[in-house]
Length: 493
Image (cartoon, rainbow, N blue to C red):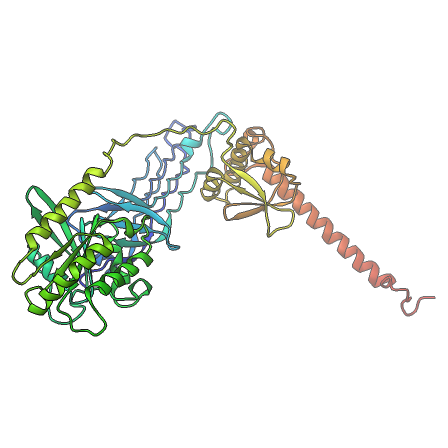
């Protein structure tokens, strides 16, 4: 069973809003009590929150599905449905939220940082809220809006000041154990470190963190070894330290070629958060100088490394702790310089951007799949479609009034729409018929009905009846006089 997970896929489903209630107040001696249906409650949202006490994404590995509760339905007597609580998911500091296509949606850094992965649906209005001078007792209510759903990729990128990079068995874990109170696994075989390890180091008044990632090998940026999975953990590091094994007996390897090979891999890796790793300050630590041959090799290549790369080079031994103090204070100086160069965080300001006067909030475009059809796109028209109960004629008429007031019909006419052409809004396609202006026909309609739809249905029924009569008359004429094919039926002269 894994104990450290730094990449998971979360399936988030927000709660749906509660339906509004269509109710009429009934009480003795009050025959005209009026509508008293309450509004539906809001559905719960799925929210990611940074928790300092969480250090891994292991919980999402076992439970990848997160679903918030639905809002409660409204009731009579002006009783509004209860809002559902948001489902807050604790994530580690440094979690990056990405879409399925790899686009970065949020970088969650800092305790308490929040990101709404899936927003809960709005509750539907009850008929009490829909009452007006033209529609005094609505016989319908709006449906609750469905909650958002989506798949999100969560990647943990450790927040450390110094990142240790090097070949397997270079001594990175031993260096973290020698500099801090961390106790990573240390053994004499490659790839001992399978997950990143963090340690807190104190150098004078400077306190910083050091990250030990699994060993890199040539080809790590292309998926070889474990490096590709954990290179993301050094993206946030302000300083990189090359830990070089000077006591290795592997053929074809030496400190200079090791550093160059790792630099090539770091240059090929493209951080998802932007920027490149090439601009980070570097230090070189020639490790294991407690071995006589390793000390001689370190003294031999130290000047060559400094001249070729231009970075400070330190000779250290994690076994005898030789040279660790100098290396620690050098790392602290680089971290201090990086922190001083960062811009001062300004207080968050709320920027209000009013909608332009000529912005109708929707667009009308030709439908590429239906010849002569049109598609209406916009947040409000699509939301109104989702909240309409199409089994209720009055609700459908109310939807037509809202679309007409918004200017959808005028926009369709200007775009070249003709009566009967298919129009798509959201996931609903209908044959467009210009409707009567709002409030004219509605006042004369009964509860749950709309005269415009009744007339339309009667006209459609009359057309179908006329078509059936015409087909029957044609069939009878064919039987009596024969089809018009130039051949007289038998018995005719």
